[in-house]
Image (cartoon, rainbow, N blue to C red; front, side):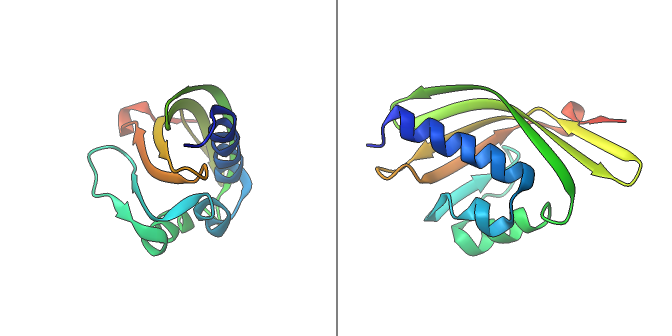
Length: 123
């Protein structure tokens, strides 16, 4: 099992790359057979190809992130963070809570993001 420090490092890298990295940078943190359910209740994206397609949608956007807190228990972590996306004059702010599981190498094996459109703040 990955150590709590390894899991925290992966979460920090994830938040950092969601804020400024490419889809490939983000997907490199995942196992080949990982799943992404974002938001919870939608059809999961399974495997690197599907997960890359999912994150490619944010790649061209002006965005930033801020990590608020991380809690690690066993091979899982829950964390809250902020994503700010700017599109022209419009700003979209979202504070999701993500829950991830990790393999023995500290790679993400599953991610579930808890948020809804009601949580999106526009300005």
